[in-house]
Image 1: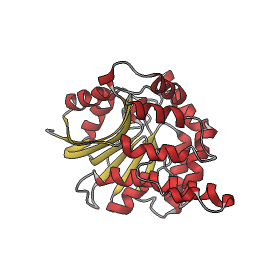
Image 2: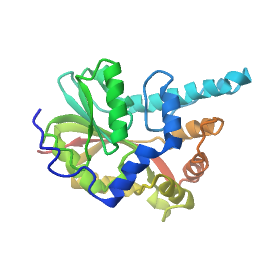
Image 3: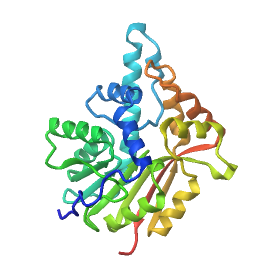
Image 4: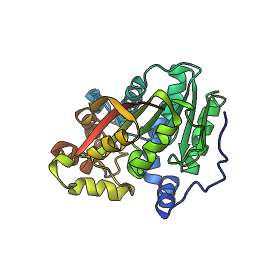
Length: 290
């Protein structure tokens, strides 16, 4: 596949991008959660979960309770990735997909398993690139699933080369106008973009203290809900499905409060979701025009 020279421009172009990359390269607390859950079946994610948990994991022998909770949290985060892939539409083995902000690579590997197609993940964390490529190699899919140290605002991939693109909890680190312009360039006509993200609810006014706390903790810039739809429309990406997953993610966070892996982010997430200041959305949009 023809690609622009990735060395023509540096991957990390701003002080903010360098700080985000450093956070994900060096944050041991969040890595502890992702690694422990991924060890359940070797699918390592970098996002949260949805669905009704089996609360029986809180019962039974105390010495195995934490193991049961971990397995259930992992089931819920994998269910979230499955839901995202459900919305990619008609993907064939000869198609190419891209995972924007691919983390540890779990969803990319799942996409290849489901569709049999090529998947390229891009992330500004060199550590994540190495980890994810190692997982693809261990699973024997490195010929079709590859991860790249690249900036999803300017990937270097060929124009019109992607049948589908997704982002999973990564859009809060970038300017949406720049991001969707790049994704629109990459998608073939009729191609599909799927996003799962947390966003502030601008119907109620300014961001709440809990949303501001989440921003500060992760060093991100959570966007208002309306900003997503403005940026999509400006870049020929037309929503075909919008799903409010807020109610579906609250049980994940409630279960996580019982885990030894809890990091302290659970309270602000639960508070902001329950008060309505923060929403968890899935948006699927098609590329129109050329």
